[in-house]
Image (cartoon, rainbow, N blue to C red):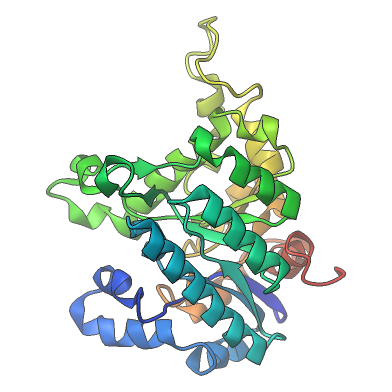
Length: 331
């Protein structure tokens, strides 16, 4: 399929490049860093070769979220966003941008999102999971965005009417003891999905979407396992009559179906895609590759031949993104 729009496509600036060094064995690091620092070379060649019209670019992980010093997090986010704006301006027909945000400081993150959307033309934000802030636990405690100090930030996200992409990062060492002796489970294998799914469920349970029903949240990797678990999340011990112990007023399936979109990034399996279509509908699914951590050809060749209808392929590959990110008038 030609004309695809890809939504989880990463780049790095020199200040954040080393954050990605541990995700591949040493011999592959030179290749990965070249991919991360490139935008208009091999990346564009790969897009041309595999029918991708537009990539929405975002900073690598954990990057800004792992900088506990507020001033430095704010500085690096602004640098990354300015660099990305300059690169997108060179080929606005092929690239768009997600903002990096210093959510260690909710007020600064709110101001930076406003700048990126209203002045730089970014189409939303991508944030790499929880943030670390030296003013909270000396930077050793994770800050999740269901916490009360983020409500004003979410109000601005809703006002700006742009999607927020909740991207993974690994749990902090003190929260990763379940993986002791099994480091292979961290990262894309399992740790990313578990961490992001819990964060998304915290947002739903907190009542955030009751207060701000217009919020639009995107999560990758075919929904980080949540679509397959929605019944169990809502109906645990269904025979027991007991009130739930969280503020949310509605079922999790309602919030997930109305406030969330998922992407195919790094999860190129037709059975999983069909299951997601059955659970939340093709209108809520978006194409993504996860370049440069995954291959564009693996993503595109799978998607172009997956056993779904051509109408759903066009929605997932293109028109859903046109609508959600207001990239065009729609087709």
